[in-house]
Structures are given as C-alpha cells and as structure tokens.
Amino acid sequence: MAITRLWICLAATCLGSCSMLPSEFNLSPLYRHRLDQQGKVLEMDLVWPLIHYETTAAGGSDFRVRPLYRRVTEPDPADISLPPQAETGQQQAPTPL
Image (cartoon, rainbow, N blue to C red; front, side, top):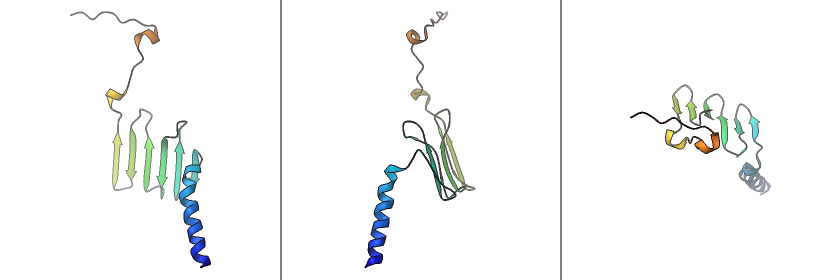
C-alpha cells in the first residue's frame, strides 16, 4: 500500500513539474533543454547524443537521431518580413522598365 502511494506521488510530481522547469535544465546525459525569452525551445537533447533538436539562427530547425536520421529545415521565405520603408528611413530608386 505504501509503495503504491509512493509511485502515485512520484508520477504526480513528474507530471506537474514540467511547467516549472527553468529555461536551462540539464540532466545530462538523459535530458537537457534550453529556452529563449518567449519560452520557445532553442535546443533539446534526449539520451544525449542520440536525439537532438535545435532551432537555427535563421529560424529553421535541425533534428537528429544519430546516426540514423537528420532533418534540417529552413524558414519559409513568406514568413520572413522586412521592415517597411517608412521605418527604415530609406527610399528605393524606381526600377527601369
């Protein structure tokens, strides 16, 4: 009976603690993650170095299951927005036809 209660308490602690993890959490080599200011995942490792995920500087992602699989994605050009001309203070020259 006491062992059952102990397992229930451990399970509840594990499930509830995920929302209280810090922005950099390290249980190497089992688990590690790093978050940015908005709480998005910058980097995560599971059973390091086997499973690795990170967000690239350009906004894409890099996912690896070493040595079997690797997927690198780049951000969609339609999602990248340039600042309007009024905010930059620059004017473009008209393009010749």
